[in-house]
Structure formats: C-alpha cells, structure tokens
Length: 53
Image (tube, rainbow, N blue to C red; front, top):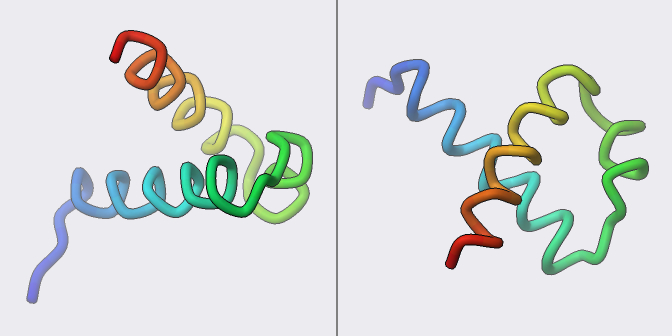
C-alpha cells in the first residue's frame, strides 16, 4: 500500500483530532508530544472544519 503526502497528512490530522476530541488532550499537551509547527496548521484546519459543520 502506498501513502502519498495527502494520505499522511490526513492520518496525522485524524490522530491529532483523536487526541484532542476523544482523549481530551489540550493543544498544549499535543504540542509537547509532536512538532508544534505541524500541529498548529493541522489543528487550525480541523478546527475550521469542525466549526463549520
């Protein structure tokens, strides 16, 4: 199975959303676990999607 960049971004986004929404981690807790620059962009994008739904 081959994963392109978009697939990888979606997988990471799903993981971050799971940490945030299901595990109850704050963005600050998640940032301590992973690269903050990547997390900021993904959380911003997923927050926009969640708020528009």
